[in-house]
Length: 346
Image (cartoon, rainbow, N blue to C red; front, side, top):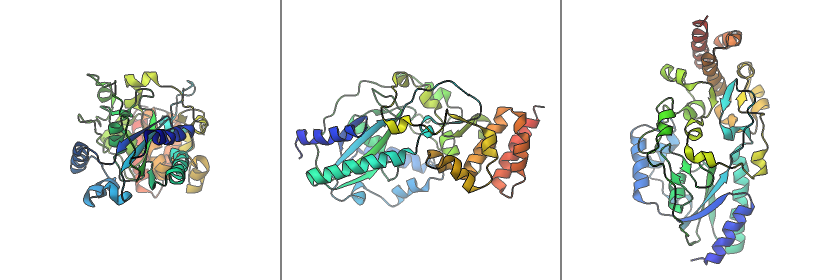
């Protein structure tokens, strides 16, 4: 067992790189988390994210990721930024998407922490940020860094749910200082009530097949007609269940300079500018280095068609007509849906 003083050095070093909170937890999770995850998969709530179901099918364990893993280091990074109420028209993107891709920012920091652990304590490490078959939120909850709320988000006492989670597995046996979590959802159901597609389940999980974040990012196929009307102007992600959460009223702006630097003036991007994109090169020129790359050109234009249909903006009709003439059947269908909706309001 590494002495507490040495463990504190690791935590302090990670915080010096910009991590907002760092906690330690044992490598073995209580069985309830795996059970909930497996039931979620069995019900098909993971949609087309087959990499998640493969974790169950292949019986992946933490020792498959790093042999002799004894401890898990959970790192949270606050990304919240205070918004200036400017242009509120156009396609809306999630708060985190206005900055450089968080994977790139956090991976660099994790690499430094891993190097520090290897150099100072000869510990083996392996780091993940949304890239490995790990139940990050489960480890975060057992570490005491926060708790899983009714909206499925990890909620912290100091930053609410506006945090990115990352994980470092290590062969070091690190002591855990478990501090009691003093917050809870109680009887509050604001997130469930506010979700326009009823994607939030009662057991703190999400039905990805209905979730706007999934539909606009991970989903690579068509969006169901019965969901399009409910998606409003969201074109990348969705923050509704977080925006209504009372715990997020105490959010504080991030101190990390890389997240303070934004690529967009606000969270609303011109739908016309997106519908005009004709090539992958044009898409790359506008969004390279941002999380929006995850949706790819086809996905973003598909999302913009849905938002255009919901916008009531007749000026977008010529651009939608151009998209409807494409050979891409998915984009054609979504553009025709939007045109039907806009023209029905004439």
